[in-house]
Image (tube, rainbow, N blue to C red; front, side, top):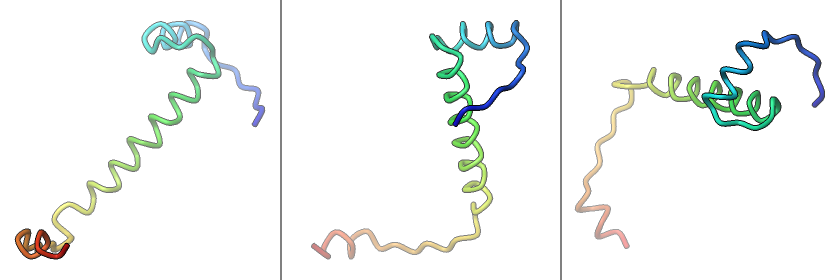
Length: 64
């Protein structure tokens, strides 16, 4: 998808340097992927302690 946006040049240069990306497109894609990944992880953390998992490992191992 093509989109035109105005980004601060110093911020883009620093981000490209830190991320070792060669193009602005790669930089933005990497940033978006990282943003989505972090939010998915955070949403999974919200379930901590809310799911009761009682697993009998011996029973599962014999299930083959």
